[in-house]
Image (cartoon, rainbow, N blue to C red; front, top):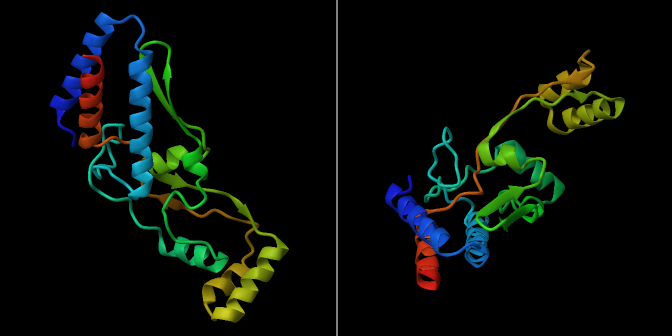
Length: 194
């Protein structure tokens, strides 16, 4: 949990700056760059959050790493020849959609325009509907002959027309700031503008 005193100090500095300047664009550009760097650090370090899945905010920074990939995901990645790490950043797709910018003269906006950004930030349950095709049944038989696992045989023989798996995605907050990030922002804007 981030020390409330730092947040209070930041609010105080911004109120002071707002009373002194009509346009905070130079301050906001600097803050945006610092936030962007902090988010990149979250990916590089595979998580920097407080571990509290019930209350994820931008101020949820800490020292906890993200949960490891599920065994089934690791097996899929190995089968496809993909690297197992870094979590959430294998293709850079999610990270490339994150935008940190100032908006107007007094605010900073952080957005992630990936369709899967929210499920990774907050975690959740996916319940896709997957139609079972003849090609899939052939795959299930091939997997059964390869492994001997009855699960594959059952999938090949099922009368169902579709699968409805339930997939739990753990929270892996990437838009968070640590106490150190906030202290750096406070220090730089205090030095540059106050």
